[in-house]
Length: 425
Image 1 (cartoon, rainbow, N blue to C red):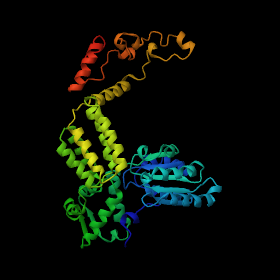
Image 2 (image 1 turned 90 degrees about the horizontal axis):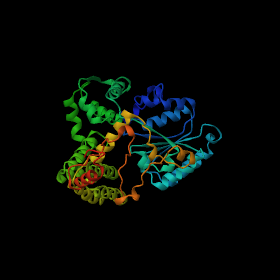
Image 3 (image 1 turned 180 degrees about the vertical axis):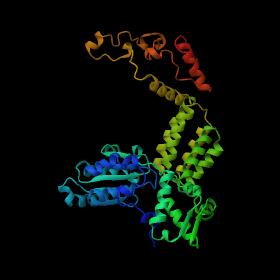
Image 4 (image 1 turned 30 degrees about the vertical axis):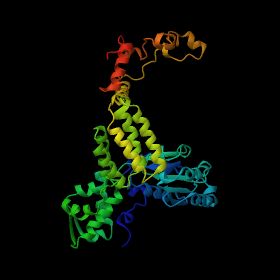
């Protein structure tokens, strides 16, 4: 049998669909839309092997609509236009059940390719279902994203994965021929990384590897037969998260040697260049901040540059940025300030804005005292005047505490000189 186990076990209905209960459970929002027969254009966002393609096929089956499928890897604008023309001519145009167009890995479509979908989606010629492993906020053009409802699919839980294995043991005509004992499953689940497709393919490999009719699944058996075949860097599994964690911690810890090493691991493994660059932008603000504001400028320019250049040359630009960030002064003061502020808001709720800080566009608001006592800083010496800018209940609350570095020490002195009677610095 040449069809992989993952394909043989692919569910055909919502009843047999495992996981994503927040979407397709009894009270799931997507289940209700499917049953009602009124579907908006959708984008499924989640890691590989969590059922995005399967869910699209189930929707097509259960809604009884014409179904067209494209992969962004090998489709262009011409392919999109051909499908749209077919959809316009189909019977779905004359009923409430317009055709479904599924595009796998839609994040790989260029702006022009995504633009070619807009008219068809807007006029209702097709209902788009896009699948992506990348954040659609970054990878899908705003005009198309605004016309779609985004659903987040979660990685399979341990219970879901074990249910899949047991389903294979019981239902698959080839696997069920053998006597299989699941003695230990930790290694099997870990290597799958929450990816159902990978789990089932590994499981099938293990079963086929054993010449005996009885197959005992243990951690040693799994590692012996599978681990030597796994790549050094799995950009969709557990190592993806472990290596990016080591990468970020090395830069935060000011070790350029380790940082470049982990960068090379990701580059050699084919990690998405934009994913690496986005993490550097976040780090430049979260871990460096105002200790060196130029870090954010360099990180942002790095993102723009590597997006334009691509591999292999992008590795040089990334290396330059990584070394700069690793050897920069560090501060998490800005990150801690917003974190404290959000926590404070959750505790205190929506406190009223002081009258002197409120906008006063109408005469009534002026009569009520809006903005009346506001002191305009530029009217005072040094363009500064002491006033309270927080809600009265939070007066004097310090959220930003400058870090212990040269630049933020200067910021601390600046604040002490101006705010000594309001804040304790």
